[in-house]
Image (cartoon, rainbow, N blue to C red; front, side):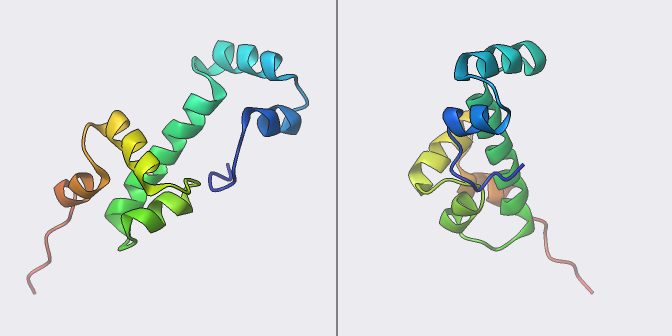
Length: 99
């Protein structure tokens, strides 16, 4: 999935050749959630992986998964993980190796 694209319900429906309402019904029946909630979950999961595997800033990480607004991204992240992106990175940082 191309998470960084500015997806809307209309563009998703157009991509799969369904009406908006058909898409929402089909998606909910198959996946158990709305298409936009699924997209948000995919974005926060990718953001979490990037936070622990890169040195990108929070803003750069948010943009790389499709959010233009770092504060909105942080709110979505906190709602999903219960901590801010900064705190998540701190909690999951790997200690440096001693040679």
